Length: 320
Image (cartoon, rainbow, N blue to C red; front, side, top):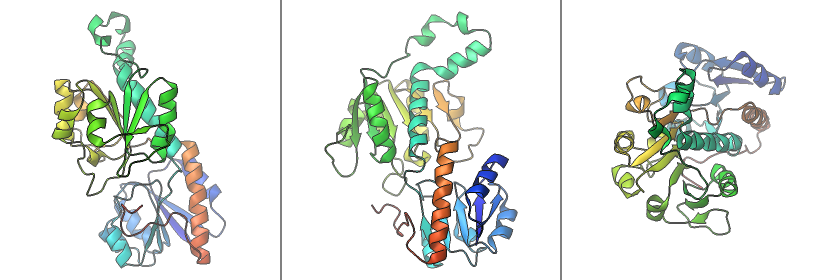
């Protein structure tokens, strides 16, 4: 069985994947931007190990014997599910494998945005840390005593909530279906938007959530709110976010995901000092990859034996 890992992996990551793979599973790594190499390797591939580069119908045309697209992570908005279904290719993801990593990165971005870590780091490296204008830190704020609103309450959000509570925050959350008995308190989306000092996104991107945070949503928020997004860039209208950051409606933002990735150099968010940025790697730690590789080996074994896959998804990416 042959699996193609479509990701610009380091030598260490490649070796970790090889070490986690049983003898009968041959793994081949292809860089994200190597379209020609992907075409060649997919010709005899049984499994595509997908990270972020879109799996389009055109890509699948070059994979005549592909049986499984194994998403490393949770979101499947980058997979043409209709095309995969039409071609009889199964799709699975791995909920929970990177939840701890995303939880920790969300907290890191939240703290960095609230405490102006990037600004202070740059000033200190430039020899100006002790000569900063006094006003620079006037709006540095703490999590303690703040209301943190989590939009979506899946595994990442549930891990994050008790950490925030331990730090002294009041934590509320919104989902499509009201819940009880959790650390976070359920609230409606309008109540979350208008009542939160910090808002963090934790939901999939689909037709119902595209630009969930648009100009109208930003207008409902408290002035000076902090926004964190480690979910998907398309959840936020970036133009509206830029305007909100420039006006002070949004105090600061921590952003791991963007509407267009890789991010074009002229993207306005890149130029704003009150934004902390990361290149969609909240999911990526040595531990999360070890968990992911174990699931890959297991699902490839299940595929080989003809038994049910772990975390196989339906045609509808919003189901469940």
